[in-house]
Length: 405
Image 1 (cartoon, rainbow, N blue to C red):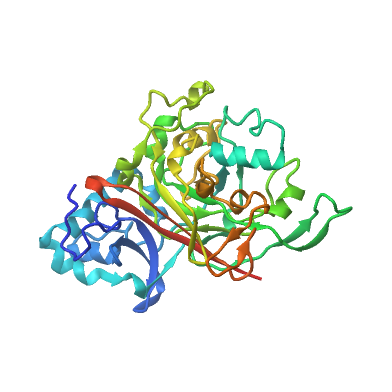
Image 2: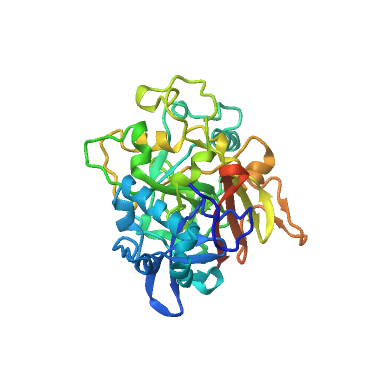
């Protein structure tokens, strides 16, 4: 597939034709009409308008969200991607397609698809080990089930919001260990979780698990995600049923969905497993679905962490297989996230609870302030890139959020 475009792009742009992520936008010319856009450099291609201009109108690309395209299945995804690449690389299409390009700065980006169900996993051994050491000092940090199955929980899809949406500090019950009883008020230990999310396109029926080899047929693409966490609310409520109000108040999602086919050069083998996996999770003879994504977390414009996704113990293919192992069905728009991405080194941890070791070692910011957890007004940004063809990088854009009181 050609990576040479007739657009005037930097040679090393992470948003060249080797990427072509999908989003949904509105613009001043039609402010009430959401349209499917494809990012190319610092421009957005109005995909539906381009299809009409080429003489190949598409109901899928003229929709006001990505769900119809995602539901159409992998052969259609590949055909649409091939067409988009042709429109942006063949000079014969330039006259028709160029008027359909809008500057990125002139559009407003929206949640790119309607979220059906939301699942959050816990797939980083480094993150799980760090939290085990923090909360269970002197004990085995990993729970006995951790290396036998991808641990996860079902979250709240209705509070998944697009990047840039302000995050209101949640209220809830809080009880410190020394307190005699809980009280109610704003979270004092508001945190981030830098994650990678996978978007389901093709649905499945109840009673029919999706095996490891079904991952590419069902997953449409990949986004960045910040699963905000109120650690104090969560610590009091989560026994015995797990996360609830401490997580459900907001989950921020990046506006661009990177197609799986844009990530073929980023595929790597996952870390060596030291526990024999059960057959439905055994990927040792399968094509590897570890991904070499390089994340960066910034707080108020200052980078505080660079988590490596390649170190994740459980892959997205294994997570999907486990998610459906009991016969649970998939719906178009299902979203499942990796859990916090953390590496082995202190500056690669994807949550403040790890970066500050539960507040014991505050972060020093360039303006002279210190942080253990988030304060009102703080701006968090998560970005990522992955290897692409010929030394290029694949960009994911960013997921941001500002804390409001």
